[in-house]
Length: 270
Image 1: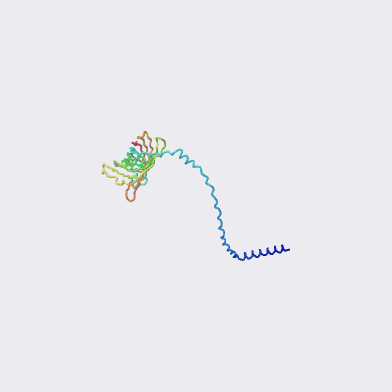
Image 2: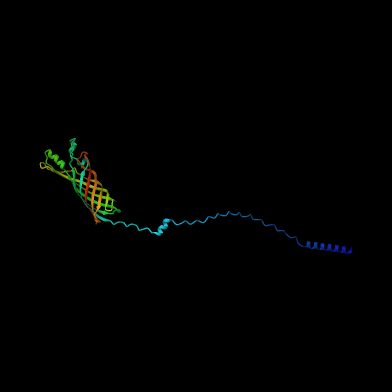
């Protein structure tokens, strides 16, 4: 009994001592909690592009690397050209008819008939470009007057006449190959044409054909060129010649120039 009482007292003393020690310690201060930062939103991941698939080299580029292109064809040289032709000329239209037709209805009388002459041409081949010719041509023809002279003789006049037609033209033509030795050159160009003439009657006098004029003209035609060698060729030509008033009788009686020309000749290109 006594031992139990002592044990209880001892336990009570220990409890009181512990309480006194605890009361002597300062109370612990509780720090407020730090504010929580809101979470940063997470950006969605950028989709990854698939790796580009290498394209095979173009077949043409590969071919170019394997076989280089040949060098361009050199420009053919510019060569001088000379032509000599004999030609025939046929007047067309009213300018070749006699003025008597105006005063005598129903009369058909040609004062200037077909004639012939010569032409000389010089220029440059392959100018202004390959297969082109730039040419300067001069021609001179004597026209026929037999029909008018016969008509005058039938009516008691013994007349003799002489009529000439000249032309200078600047021509530009283009070659068209038909075969290795034959080609056709087509083209034409502007020029100047003039007429002159006179008529003589032993019973009266000689007077000039002042009705013939000098006019601007245009030549258009084609030439066949047959190569005999690298230098010499044969040439055949057919062309048309037109112009403004080549014959004027006054009082509004003005007549335009029209004619058909054909010739053959030789071409030299050294």
